[in-house]
Length: 628
Image (tube, rainbow, N blue to C red; front, side):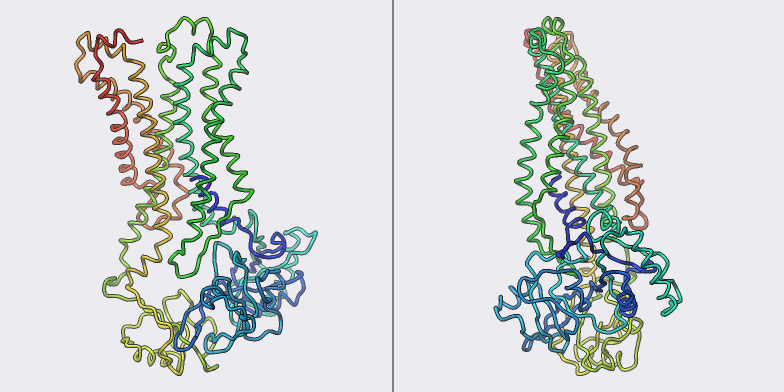
């Protein structure tokens, strides 16, 4: 699980875009804005403060008309110099260049799927939004966008209209620090404020330069980075629980080998040698587990990469094993070896030869203090994992139950994407054209009347229209793309990422609970096995079955109680950063979550103690007195 989550984290946050020398490309923000208008882009480009600047808009759909059918394509809008500035490789053909008109570059998937791998695709004309567009080239199969996070457009098209806003990407000059680049940009932005003043902000304020690879990119995606940090932390805690479990088993094994270590010590083996022997033995388990994990990683990540998420934008993960995964797996193996083997090795190296040789095996084990401590640590760690999973599950339940203010069962979402063929209404400015995810549309002259006519012909009551179309078509082509789905389904799609996150964390929580239960069961079973003579004597002296049960359950309850108290206290502080993910009404100190987690842990502890307790009740006094 660690390697799989690590691979997903690397793909989302640290994958390199398909460009030339990605480390020298940066995302530029002026005035704290994520996007800038084409006029500002052109001003910055003409100022020559940077070697080259290009613009990219990550949201947009186009209608592709083929015969009598219309299909909707997800397009990224780019300035005509993007391919040259970024050095984006092509599978066949070429990228867009300055001077190209109505040209597109299509994805490998669109070429193979929708165009049946047409060998003559370069130069082919596609009818997009009612206008012919020429295919210039095809992207490679593993193309990654500058935007990142698995976004996979069907094609790149040119930016049209001076009022369109784009993200700014620039090639950084050689030998100059990012601070020096920001000063250059600030000088240009001061001039920009004079030439194109904005009422609400100044371009010269809050200038950011964020590299598209490395830690800068991760820092620029705070919410997503924090979510994956939560996943990595939780799965690491799971690994820690498993390591504590195995460490407890090795402690028991070391205790049973007390006489062996005593003999080795009496023959001249020093403490360092015994430590090395135990650590070497314990290293075999993490190495084997890591190798198996890497093998499973290949299959899991391949399966994840083939999943097409049912989102409003196409997200395709391209998870591939690389050197970073190997380095991470090696670090896991080394860390697990220390966590698993250090305590048993230290315990074994402290064996006193004369004392150990005189003692029977069961007497060497002492009070199992170290193993008790490990189980308490397992319980506490599992509580943190369960609390995190519980908060996300509660958050999802609260999100689903929130009322949007209208009847979900009687409301439908109807998305209509149609074509503008009259320049009078095409490419309206941002204040007139509805935003892709905005709830309202401004009535602009004949634009709305055209929409209403189309809705009437499509069989929709205009009086109940809550969100009209993104673009209007004056000749009212009835084959425009129309999608209709129940609003509950639409909201469910919007909550899909939350559901996936909550589901994944819930699985981890269940695994943590299971591992902790196994660890507690192992300790109690071992404790009963080591105390056979004691329990037999108690029974022989008249101890009732209830007294024996209290002996076993009492020890387990004490361990669970201490671990539960520590874990709940730790969860209260550890989960505070998760507050930004929670909806109103859910806090990181949610009492229902803490109560549910406590009940689950108590039940798991009861189940873990039940089998050893039953075994203790079946001990025969005479057999116990003969037991060695």
